[in-house]
Length: 356
Image (cartoon, rainbow, N blue to C red):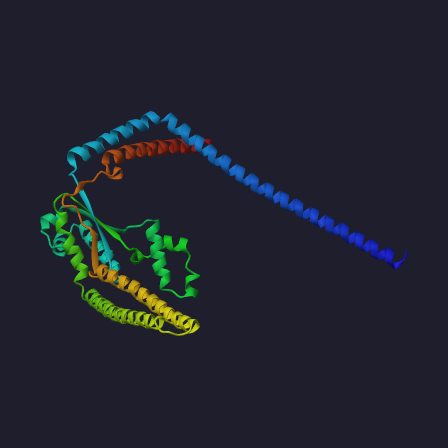
């Protein structure tokens, strides 16, 4: 046997070993895939079995549970419509400026904690109302007004203040879930009270608690002065540009009347027209900046803008999850379910003990 035959046999042996290793790999992959499929199947089968047992359990004790639910709902209805005082609700939408949203949330949280602690003296002092009026308040809450457009606008404003490298690390989906409170434009203050006429008295104290803060007053004054200075500079520049445009028009008109060759006139007119277009573009750019400055002067004239005020008369609270008739019905059903489950479990434990 020559050398070439030996090499061919070695290569053939290696090929067979490689084929065998690949085959074993596919077998292992197949077994792994089968194991995963079987695990998922058994898990789903177990969950479905538990679900059927739950349905059978509820079906066998449905009359008891429904009786308990009806009793709980009836008791809740008696409390809701006969014993419980009627509560009224009203909301105010605000637009905080200069980062004052953070302080606004702290103030509202402070008022809410006073309500929960029944500290109506401090609450009355903070809201500039009587103690009796303060005791009628049952809840003070605040939350950002959010929709897809508002989130997108907040994201745009947020990334506008970042450099190009930092923007790459700010994902929109993550931002929308973890958006900071102060980045929202509008916020809704909701108050619940037993007095339906109190809401008009609460707007000014809540707003003044922020707008009279020295820090925000200074920030607002500085911002307004800067905007007024910028507006004045823009208006002066626009007057000068307007005068320059008129000058170019006169030059163009004068050159067109000269008696000279057509080529020289054409080149002169072209240069004047180009300069006039450049001046016009600068004028329009400044005009857009002036519009933006005027909008900011209007929007930032106050530390907090009231977009919509509290209603003069509050509306009755009608949210279903605050209705004690519904709460009592659900609670009665759940309580009976729990009691029967504990009883069944106790029986199983006794039977298991007897078998030992």
